[in-house]
Structures are given as C-alpha cells and as structure tokens.
Image (cartoon, rainbow, N blue to C red; front, side, top):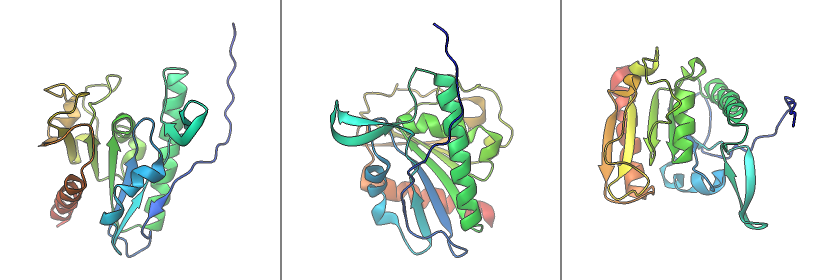
Length: 217
C-alpha cells in the first residue's frame, strides 16, 4: 500500500491564564500529558497566576474521546503512527506559540514545563534551536525520550533544567538517565506518584523563577 502526505493548516487550542504584556515578568508554557486536556491541565496551575505571571497551555493536536465514543475530549501529542511527522508538526506548533509569547511579553522570563508525555514533547522542543527563547526546562513525571541525541546541544546545556519525580511514581526508573546536555539538571524528588501536587507546583515555580532572577542579576 502506498501513502502520500500533505501539509495542511490546523487550528490549535491554546488556553491561558493571566496577561501577556510589557509588564509580564514570567510566562510558563505548560504541556499536558497523554489523555489530558489543556484546559484541565492549566487549572492545576490557576492558583499561581498573578498580575506579573501568565500561564499558557498548548493542547496536543490529536484529540479523542476519553471513553471510546463518549466522555470528555482529551488530547495526545503523538502516537507511533506517522511518528516523525507528528513530532515535526508539534515542534513547529510550539515554535509558533513561543514566538507569540515572546512578542506579547518581550521582557518576561519564559519557562517550559512538560508532564508525562508532554515532558517528552518539551524535551524534544528544548533541544531545537527554535527554543532559544526558553530560559528553563522542567521535566515532570518522565524521562528524556530515547530518540534525543544524548550528545551536547549548543545552548541547551547553558540553561537550567529541573526534573520532578514522585517517590512512588510507577512509570519512572529509580535512576533517570541524563543526556550530556542535561548533566547539570537539578533532580527534585517529592512524596507522591505520577501527579502534580499543588504545593510541589508552587515550590517548583518559586525555585525556577528565583534561579532565573539570580542569573539575570
């Protein structure tokens, strides 16, 4: 069976909380996990929105019903089908989101956080030259995807990387293998599983932003 491909225009759903402006100091780009919606994922961070901090959550382009043909609509970043093309598509999508954020909030520090499948998505994007406006990467509840070249990435190695790991997360190995560019990553283990506890979100945000401010000064 032969297959042909076409590049088509898509409409992406990107909810946000807060304001993107000249006065914005911090912007968090949040990537949900498999079988989640951007809106629900963003709600986990709603209490951290301030007049100077904005939260924005791009949603994966592949949507489906959470219960077969019924239930809430959720999303995925990719599947094994046409894998390379789906990765290329979401990298271009995230580049568009990042450039929009940088244009609307030119003075803000920009941080990229991915959870579970969204963490693999975030890691791949962080390794692209197009991500150079991202100041820090947070990998939460995931390992670096094996297809990332475990060699030095120019620019990536100079930016802070944080890894959040639940002590009882059944999806993570005891020791997370780090690519060369992430050997400086700060690993934070918290009591919990494959989840994002509100108090851990708050502590992580403060730590990442303080690191950014300290570097800027």
